[in-house]
Image 1 (cartoon, rainbow, N blue to C red):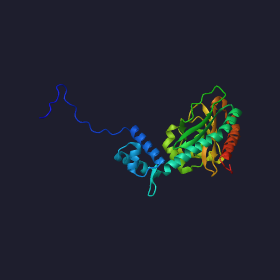
Image 2: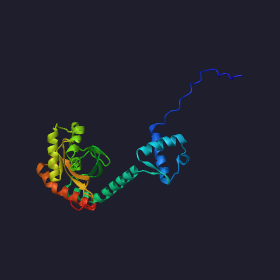
Image 3: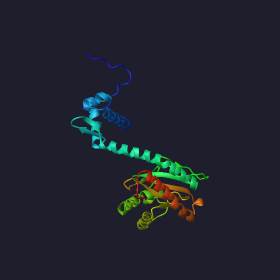
Image 4: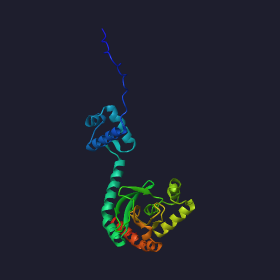
Length: 266
């Protein structure tokens, strides 16, 4: 005899298994990376360590392998992949760079009384690693960990000096709309050629109308540009004549940081 349904509202229809939200998938991926770092032999071992089902562990592990975060070693099982090694090296380099550069940036800030930045390039953005605030009553909108476009900032243009004209064209095509005033491709290329030849760059209000800055690249032991520094202030403190005078101070500080990173010919 079949049980009767209780009176009242009809029973809800069966609910299909919901796809895990992206945040949950991300956390599971991190759990897998941490488990792999501790050593796992196979997927069953991985599922046991993380508390996931075999199919879930297999699915996420496959995605991590495809992106080179995890690799399969025929002898030792799963191991961390080259992508994590690359990211770890970048993180270490950035921490080391900031530590080495900070005293030099502080000295430059004292000498100029202006805001000093250290940043590196990530895709089409400057990411700020350090900032020494101005002694003047001047507010610069940047922040450590924040970003601004390469194309419109002095520090961004310094980071692009070794990129070459093909890459400059691509940057312009993707980001010209971010410039405060219309600039043709040829004008942009001509500006970058001049900056590269002279080893410094300016922001002449392309990013924020009232801000001016002088920037120079920082190189590592291989001679590669890995960062750039800048001195920034409002237009009232940054006449063309003062910007010209600041070039030597900014370049000197950039060379000192480069020397700390092992650069010899800077």
